[in-house]
Image 1: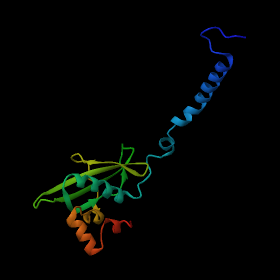
Image 2: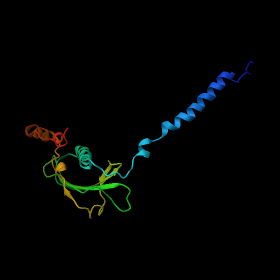
Image 3: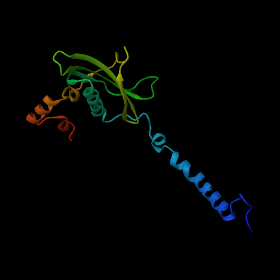
Image 4: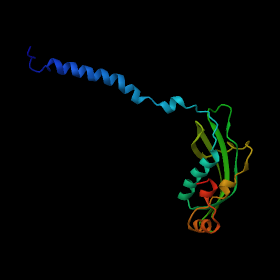
Length: 163
């Protein structure tokens, strides 16, 4: 049997249908997001202090912060009406320029036990939390002077977190 002009031969049509059927069965499996469906968003964060310090280190490297003092952190909690764990952090930054000091308060949002956002807290958002000392953040030191100090003392963030 000869195919009409413009019509594919019979075996090409069968092969094409078979490929389309196989793709229809396989592609949905590729598009599923196993992490999103398998992760409970309300897992209590276990390493929240380390994750907060790591995130703040990135923030401080962009805004000329050299050291931190008066750091405090709250325990992560599920607040009424919120579906994620949150923790509040407050600290005083000291810049590379003498006299450059600033107080800050941030709120950390966690999803599936991991830090998801660390943003400036709105006024009153962290008023009722119980802060506890946060020495891991107080010890944060950035810049060349800190690197030299770490070498002399043998203490640095790598030692702090066992790296």
